[in-house]
Length: 254
Image 1 (cartoon, rainbow, N blue to C red):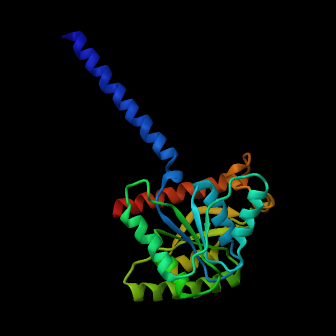
Image 2 (image 1 turned 180 degrees about the vertical axis):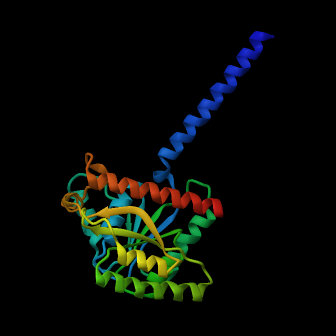
């Protein structure tokens, strides 16, 4: 009897450890397996939407929906292919109906291997297509810094968010990402004031600071997470972990 109990306890501990290991493995690979639509949006150009979308797509093995007429991601992807690296999937969607199909696809195949992860790179302008890209997103990320023009642009973008909410009855929660700021800057008073005045926006804890590696890697189409350890890579991985947390919290609410 004593041996039986010992064996039973051993098996219970074994399966408990096995379950824990599998859980940790799943969490470690969550970003590659996560099923979602992430829209990188801002009506102001030059805030880093395409750069973030490109590096994020490589890190997450995701497809990019390129709505930016400048075709930055397509050019970077060509450079990636020319340097012998596997290109990311880039789709050029032209209509609102195409975007809605993407959303409906993930709803239809939720929980199956047919679900896809999409990153939508919204151009720096307002349009019906861009508004749909914002409305269908599981996560809206808004890159910005504390420059005066960026703060003005945020107020204009806030108005667009309000109009989308009014026309769709959706409750959007844009995530404000401090991006392309000096490594020396510690205080972001203007951005803090914007967040305090606009409670539907949430300030991300992650900060992507100005780093030379972001631009060096683009010369060869390399993802920031594909290089050896650097400050840029460390910051970007923290950004990815925060995305994981936000998506996980969103799934709990669903």
